Length: 458
Ligand SMILES: *Cc1c(COP(=O)(O)O)cnc(C)c1O
Image (cartoon, rainbow, N blue to C red; front, side, top):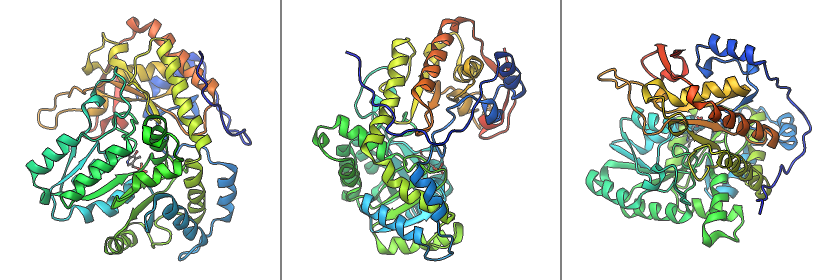
């Protein structure tokens, strides 16, 4: 039986032209970009899968809200609308606007980590880890072992390993742990969901030891849809109720609104404790702006207020996750290896398996990204040894656990035909895989090199 994928619950009212360059032009462009996709101009890209962050398409309701945005410095109308939507959806009494997810982390984490040594998470996202470290603490990841096996199916590969969590708390001393962070979905594990059962258990462990429990909520809506599909207790629950259950009893959350709230810029902090909220407001005023705009334009706040509800619409989510499953099924049929089951926002293609003849120090996932651009003007990125970089002590190239080429899918932007182009391109590449060669680095900065390094084909 052919699965039903649930097509777009919208029609297209405004279009943005994109073009595909000829194969010869693409070869020139990628060479001029020193074989680093971050150096490509977006106008030279046909399908841009670099990230799903801030790249979604706003609805006609959001665009009309842009015109209604109130740009008053204090107490703007849109501020009250965000407060209403966020307190209703997340069930938290106190909500602070900030300009994006990392701004929320910059404001909140130093408060939670003052005088503490550790933060423990199912997996810290890069910016979360950076802000834990900037606050003088260490970030410890504690994901279930099932996440590490890319070929086996497991419903909730994003879950916290609860046994290890208890052990870490015991070994490190509860008084040294400032916060336990649940990242939903688990971005770094491949957009893998976390069950509500696991969220509740981690929350209870945190509270038993007197530790703050925080949710990193960038993909709260996609996570809730997976919960509805896969967790028995929630089979007939609404998405609204699942979001409520997920956040129940959490002390606070940070959120990048650039993902599931489908806006191009924005972020939120939520908390229950009045004294904590007072500290959050003070730091927001120093770093972001007055509390009622938090570093955002009124027009963007208005779009965010509307996006929070659009992101949890069940028809939208059925289409969104259906798109991911459609692409995953086409890749499986074509024999393309990837992290299974597919996550909520990206396909992580296993370049180590697709290009087994290229060793980690010749960057197979980067080589595959370059082939995708050559083949069809698709921009993906390396999440592997090229991104990982060198050992800071020895200067030697580190070997990553995985060599993933990540195809992040923007929300409401590409149609099923675009997904077919992506699948067909990978299948064509697989046919000539043996002939594909690795790369060497010819120039690199000392940190975060993957954004600017220059490469050459071997
Ligand atoms: C994107 C993201 C962040 C950071 O948000 P920005 O808006 O990019 O600053 C934090 N945590 C997770 C899980 C994310 O996906």
